[in-house]
Amino acid sequence: MASSLIAWPAFAGDASFFTNWLANVSSTQEAQPHWMTPLVTVTPRLEQEYRFDYSHSDQPRGVTLDNYGGGKGIEFIPSQNTEIIVGVPAYLEKNIPNKPGAAGLADENLLLKYRLLAANEEHGNYIVTAFLGTSLQTGGNAFTNNHTVFTPTIAAGKGWGDRESGVDVQSTLGISLPSGGTTTLGRPLTWNATLQGHMGKFWPEIETSYTHWYDGGLAGKNQMTVTYGATVGRFEIENRVKAIVGVGYQTVQGTQNVNLNHAMLATMRVTF
Image (cartoon, rainbow, N blue to C red; front, side, top):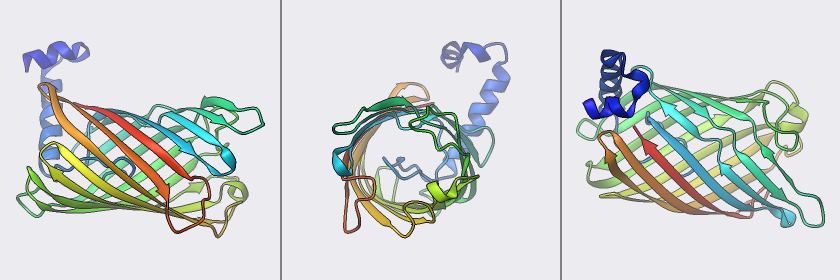
């Protein structure tokens, strides 16, 4: 633990607080499955990590969008059964054929998770968690929603196998509720589901994301995307600190291409 204290000098003056906090994080995570967080679906598991994503999207009418960060950021476990995610606003670059492009920051994202039920691989291999996400109107003019958006979500997962190999399903169902501007933003309902394999440090996956828009400019429209991807990790750097990387390809299947044709995804995470 001494080496960990060196890596975290802000806590060096209160070793007992730091030690007790990390012990609580470890016991909280030990009580749940040890699956990998998928590329798109927000995992029902409680994580503690820094995450940075990148995506390049080809959209209808020749529009392309590069997203640096993905709105991810710091995820930490402040107490048993809870997690808080403080997003770092994504930097976006949008190119439109024969028109001026746009670049700037997106809105700030915050997420609170509360774990309702969980059992690790030795005791049932399942989890159920409730989320409350919030998007704050902090972005640039080209990318802000201009309103606060709340997204209540229920998430669950079930696995089969052990900590060395197996398969799991993780899923979320949530609806975005803007504080205003519903006639523009609408109220999209999104259902994500991931089938994930596990062989050592290799985690292949197939994800689906189905969105139906209520109200707004996209009212009545539907879109389903399928993501084929894989992550590898967790590679130990030092003590608790581990690295994870992943890539994926996303495409629209069987529905309207509302805001996507296809996309390339990448993720980098450091757990602690």
